[in-house]
Length: 331
Image 1 (cartoon, rainbow, N blue to C red):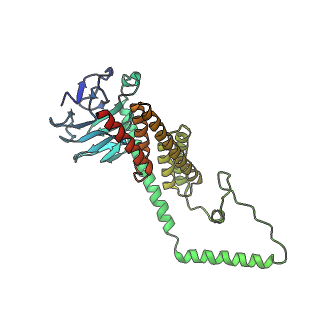
Image 2: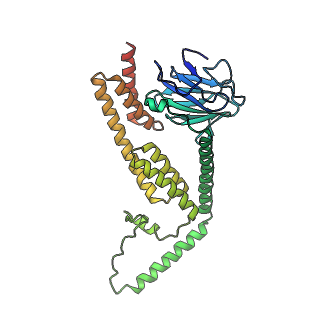
Image 3: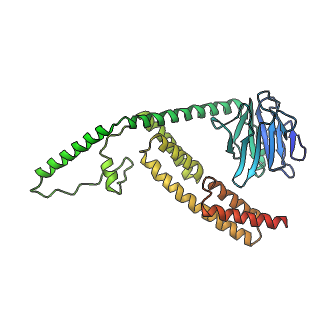
């Protein structure tokens, strides 16, 4: 273990250290209770002596993973391990991680904290590993359930054959033809717009006609979609747009006809765009008055929002600002 990059302590109650950029706390495993204080933006983890953070776990590979600070934030990458990394209910090779989240290597549960957390958080007692494992397993089961429900809904949708659709269209045509013959002598009143389940009125005729069709979504699917919708709505009201977006997208994956989730997903995208614009403008102002760290923080936050949209011109703007700041600091 390189002392220049990582400092190891046997306790979780470690005061903030000079040059600290983050820390890893062992919640479960052979090194339970230990704290690794990070003094570099890139460190490796594993069972072998050649890594920066040595974990005494026989199920961990010698060079298991790497933790890096990037323009998008902190990222954990698997380095070709045998057992992978367990994070948020699934085994995954690469993922972004935020302060307070945890991941598992072998049988070792590791909590991540960034250096700019308040001291009371850095010194807080570690999470209960049993509760952490229960949450991870519940999330894993929920993801499997969502995948099965979404797959079942897609299969059910495919069962409608072209012949059946033609028969339905013909029946609707006959109905409207007979109706028009019966009412040809009297003016037909203007039909009222059909309201959706949330009380709003569809803006276009296609959605109004679609509301006549019977729903093919089961109650289990509706319930699961509603759960994700309400999770997303709570995050949306708290201004956590990335988390809100994830939950609204899950709701629509389960039930593509969930109008509220679709509506708020569009609102999230608009709010996110506005927030990115505010962050970039704030970074520019901070850079002009010499507050480089504030400008860098705004740009890095904006880049996290744009992680999956690198073709966006705002991504290039943020990258250019960071390049100027880093160049100035090196000089």
